[in-house]
Length: 509
Image 1 (tube, one colour):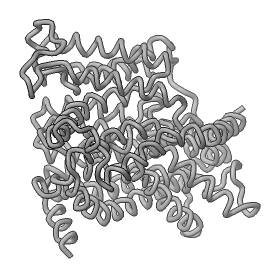
Image 2 (cartoon, one colour):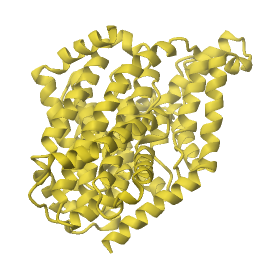
Image 3 (cartoon, helix red, strand yellow):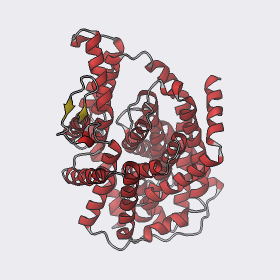
Image 4 (cartoon, helix red, strand yellow):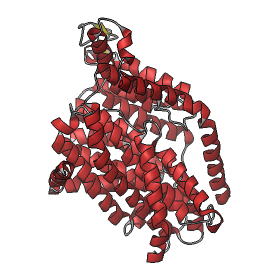
């Protein structure tokens, strides 16, 4: 009953005209960003963070807009998957398998509508799970001491590559790089300068918002310039929508099953939306068996991955809000936004900032309804975006990010830092080293160091305190599993996902 009362209070925050407007703006921008191949939700949120700061938005308005962008980008990724057979981001890859064949049969509008409905169901059920699970997990986390938190931060790095990660070693290298960058500045414990080289601007460290925009937005522009993207992409035409109630009823059980699997994948650190999408599609294909037409345009082959990846996206908010540990790349970027607002995610968030967190949760309910209402009647508007040549879109995106950074800091040096991070991001992406662990290292590094120092101070330098409680032992066991499972299950899952992608490409050929 207490949780319900808190949620109702959250709706009183989210239903103000200002917050509804920002939810609508975020949903529209997110759908547009998600529809563009290659950008994805993490890039979309990273690009818009400086804009939120430069506009002077309140913490509630900023988070409502950015979480709506996150949800909208997960919806939008299906548009290019179905019409172009090019997933907007990795979780949307499985939608290509049946979405594009359905579009080739002249049912593109039906495919887009089914994916919107499945996405709504997945997001809605995941939000219900978030409301039920998050307060309980936050209460449990109140038992954590500095040793448990150090183990938890280690878990975040150990599982960030996920089971489907291509190279766990490169993920750990990126995390170490982020931790190294986090040490720049004045040590708050001793007052000593670390790697500042007498540059005044470095005394407070490097702002991770600048790093995020450089690593994501600028590096994306550099890759675009290298690849010389063409004058838009050839897509399948959009027919008049002829969706019947029988079509919706057919995909409803599939959407429910995919939502449950997706939510579980999202809550598990490092699993993420990609695994949620893949597992949901695979299970549905096995359940339906020969009765289905999977790979040939079966609507259930669209509903399963879309419900799975949207449920996983919302499920990833659970560890981020309750433990301060992001469950996905995009929630790592959202975590940076919270920290920038001097709001520390974790169990005390539900006590100290109850109006904020429950307002954001309520806004996600509203945002998903807005997305459903937008994505069915207005999908033609979003589709036209795919006809705009990327050479016009990418510079505009970069300009928005640069102006936002300068408005935020009023420092030309920060623009140079942003460009430097962009160049670093470009090189790392060419080497196939992931960028999200760098951001996570910069975000969690200071708190991780503080927890370690606090634990060793309590124990008078005895390192055994780090595994002295049953909670910390349990977390360390999961850490070991997170490091070993990618080598055990990863190759099998990657082969199956690669096979699915090859099947989707063969359909187009």
